[in-house]
Amino acid sequence: TERVSKNFIEDIIDKDIAEGRTKKVITRFPPEPNGYLHIGHAKSILLNYGLAKEYGGQFNLRFDDTNPTKEKTEFVESIKADVEWLGADFGDRCFFASNYFEKMYEAAIKLIKKGKAFVCDLSADEIREYRGTLTEPGENSPYRERSIEENLDLFERMKNGEFPDGSKVLRAKIDMSSPNMNMRDPVIYRIARMTHHNTGDDWCIYPMYDFAHPIEDAVEGITHSICTLEFEDHRPLYDWVVRELEYENPPKQIEFAKLYLTNVVTGKRYIKKLVDNGIVDGWDDPRLVTISALRRRGYTPESIKLFMELSGVTKSNASSDYAMLEYCIRETLKLEKKRVMAILDPVKLVITNYPEGETEWLDAPHNLENEALGSRKLAFTRELYIEREDFMIDPPKKYFRLFPGNEVRLMNAYFVTCTGYDVDEDGKVTEIRCTYDPETKSGNGFEGRKVKGTIHWVSASHAVPCEVRLYENIVDEEKGVYNEDGELNLNPNSLTVIKDALVEESLKGTTEVEQYQFVRNGFFCLDSKDSKPEMPVFNRIVSLKSSYNP
Ligand code: ATP
Ligand code: MG
Ligand code: MG
Image 1 (cartoon, rainbow, N blue to C red):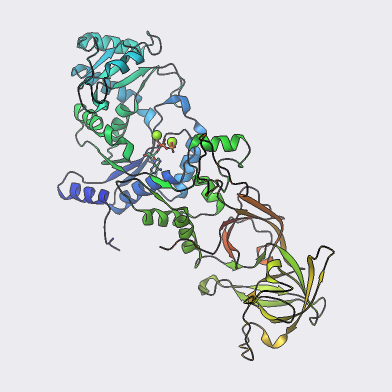
Image 2 (cartoon, rainbow, N blue to C red):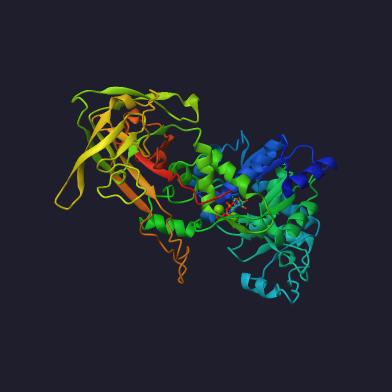
């Protein structure tokens, strides 16, 4: 279906196509392989992939690995897996910027030959002093007028390792009085003896981001190079590079606002500290918003896509609410997933008029709103477990669940009336007794009387013991993400582990990482890391109640 309104990037692309500048749209996602991807990166991935798909174009994954110090092969693998999981199909177009080092070197020589680049011997501090300020123009470097021959010779010798690290740089010769600081003869190559994860020790000179990135884009035939707003000031330099290098169909840089989520931690530095201090269980801890954590928690690619659609593509920074992400997962799961019964805080319920040792297999639909999900058989027995909070000895008004003398429906089963209970010395209920009415079996069309409450249950003899993990925000939302010292305000209750939960027998031995609605308790997903066939572990993705109104 045709979208009602297009975002500003689509408007630009439409115009480029209409005016013949673009034939086939080619976009890319260019992560630096220096960490795990987070929800913000998902926005860029889905935006770039979505545009390529919408216009019948191409989407590239390109590792921007021109800065060897922080890069690791481990991150390359996790990034690929995340991009694939999101459904952003890059086919065989996974590239590495480092594969273009030779081309970048040649590009630098081309600039030198055009008199557009020079080797400069100023130190980093001196370069900064010469650069001027926002209100003062800069001053030309004393090395700016070196001859083309001398520059070619020096640059080659830089490459050959004749000079120590930091002793010389190659700079673009643009304009030291430009109001844009990025245009004041920016450094485009530096000497640094660093081992690169891909090219090893082949190079001792490395290109700077602002020079390398436009070349990477041009080499791949990228038509629309989409990046975030902080690069807006760099666009004149991007345009200068592709113009001076005389690319035939130069790529165009377009900036959009980063996705920010309120009250979440995305900074690598902070997450690393949480991991190192053992506060979270790795980069995929379900309380984090790395893509691997969201996946482990039970978020689906569809839910993340919906979230990105709702949050839109804009030119101005604004935060999106985490509750909106929760809304998206509820919306995408509620009709698609099975609804099963699990008891998080079990208390025994004995049906005194039900024959001992008997098991009746009741037919129960998986999702009343989606017949295609079929049904399962549920074991109904004399002894069941129900949620502790579904029984009260002395209930307040409007409590329609179980209490002495009251009748409720057991979901998918019978009406039961509470006839008694036991408590231990602390007053804690240890057992509830009731009688059932065989006439009231679910699906029999019993109309004799109505009850106000329906509660869920599992069979004591058939239910499967499981572990359930409930999550709250890792940071204290009242206090805000950071305290005065710039440290995180941690929420001490961000994880609740329930070791003695019970789930209905239909999930016995399950190893499939799958989402379910546990009726009345929320949406859950099997934990991919810690779950075992004999002891499944379920993460609560989100509760059923929403604080978000679309
Ligand atoms: P971080 O420091 O959070 O890892 P980054 O910008 O250093 O972010 P890169 O690997 O350089 O990470 O990012 C790859 C791409 O993802 C870039 O095009 C970048 O603009 C984009 N990106 C990063 N963060 C966000 C965000 N919050 N929202 C949208 N796009 C983002
Ligand atoms: Mg990064
Ligand atoms: Mg970056």
